Length: 394
Image 1 (tube, rainbow, N blue to C red):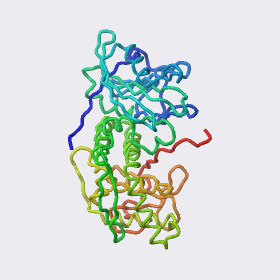
Image 2 (cartoon, rainbow, N blue to C red; image 1 turned 45 degrees about the vertical axis):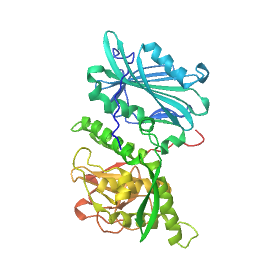
Image 3 (cartoon, rainbow, N blue to C red; image 1 turned 45 degrees about the horizontal axis):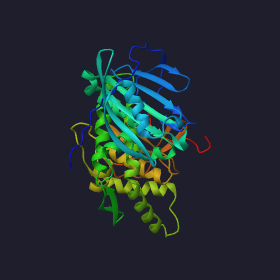
Image 4 (cartoon, one colour; image 1 turned 60 degrees about the vertical axis):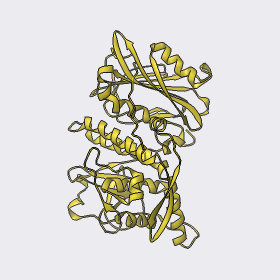
């Protein structure tokens, strides 16, 4: 399969503003309009206007983001909305089309000149749920610095959520660059049987592209005060991209667990977690020490191999299908990761945001709730929680 590379370009009208407000390490957006964006750590709000314009500048990378909201009636089509922005910037445009939650959207590579300086970046245009408006997200950097800023700019746009369903699908940018290519059947051993599991031909490559991009961005934060927050977002982005790609695997595992439980219903949450844990503990321990050192999740499933964090993240992805809460626990100094599950059972637990999670050590043949004594100190670890869509009544 050919390797796909994308280069970005767009200019925004805000690079001369001063920093005004700090942006907390949290999602930004508007629940009533139905959009959310998980900006990378280190952005600062420069200015905002009437709830329809938000301008951010990054403190570590020479790049910025502008979020603009337009009434739905202002543009009849997504092309008209994109052309409006492009014409304002006098930009050169190379567009990619993508369907997001059943609606057409555009991701456009733009290059243009502003104040005698060439700018480069990306434009994302898509409708908000229930025709509540048009969401425009621009990411930009000086053209000579755009290649270095590329992971940040793409990541900003790929962290856009519009509506509940988008929390369970890959980001808009990765969908635009890696469209579906057709399903391929894989035989995945599970509890003594071979499950016929389908992945799309693009799944492994697309998921690896997210991993590599987010790792390239993560390296910007090493040895900075933002490092832990950056690690958390790194795993959140991979988790989001993996959910839909592993949906058929989760359905087949569910079917098998119901059959083993007598055919009536799923076993209890702790038994589901224990079954997944035992399965993953049988994987071959594999690391790819080049680059991100993180194996893409579809390949972890089909090859039954991976290291601690790739297996633990896969377990979290599958637990989500069963509506079983989980987090990822990271011990940076020990270079180790485990899953932690919100379920009944005896054993070691870690407390995260007031909830006590039962440890799931995916790379050692131990029971749910067991962990090596030298890793049992809670101070060694920090937690990673997953994206949660807004409540239906918001």
